[in-house]
Image 1 (cartoon, helix red, strand yellow):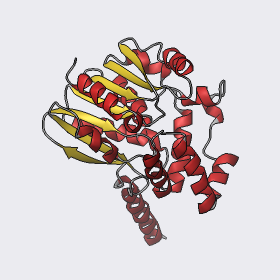
Image 2 (image 1 turned 180 degrees about the horizontal axis):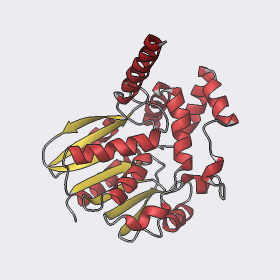
Image 3 (image 1 turned 60 degrees about the vertical axis):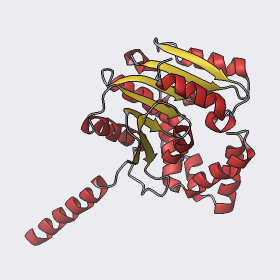
Length: 280
C-alpha cells in the first residue's frame, strides 16, 4: 500500500509538471528599440503584425505574441484567457519591460486593457484595434456572466461538429470580419488550424469577460480604433458607452472597414500606428 501511495504521488507530480510546462503563449522578438507588445486577436497568430512592423518608422523592440491552442502551439487547460493574462504579467516583469506600449487587436485589445489596469506604472500607452470591453453585453444584453458556462448545448454542438460543417461556419465568420477578399482564406485557415476545444472554450472565456469595472484603473494613454461595420454611428455609440470609465482615451472610427482594420484600411492604419508610436 505504501508503494502504491508513493507511485500515485509521483504520477500526480509528473502530470502536474507536464501541464505547468505548457506555455500559454509563444513570443517572437523583432528589432531593437523601445519595447512594444503586439497582441493578436482570437485564433490569430502573432505574425499578423509583421506587415505592420514593416511599415512603421520608429525603431522598436516588437514582442509578437501567439496564443496556446492556435498557430500550432499546444493547447493548455482552462481557464484559457486568465492563464494567458497571468503569464503575460509574469513575462513583462521577468523581461523588465518599462515604458511599455501595447498594440492589441480584438481579444488582444482586451488583454491590453487588463494588463494596463494591473501595471499602471509600467504600461504607458495602449492602442486598441476594434475591441470592446464586454462583448457579451452586445451579443446577449442583460445576461450575467454566471450563466455562461463551458458545459452548454452550443459548445457541445461546436465540439461535435463535423469538419465540413465547421469549415462552412468558419467561412461565414471570416467573410464578416474583412472586406478584403484575398484575406478571407487566411482567416478561415487560422480557424480550421485551431485546437477545437480552445476555439470553443476560449470563446466562452471571452463571452464571460467584462472589463468595464476596471477601466478606471487604466492610466495609460489610449487610442481606440473602431471598425465602422455594420453602421458607423451605432458602432461609435457602443464604443463610447462601453469605454465611459476610461478617462485618458481617444476613439476614432475607421471608414469602410470590418473587424480586421489592418487588412481593410492598411495605409490608414499604418499612419495611425506610426503617430501612436512617435507620440504625435
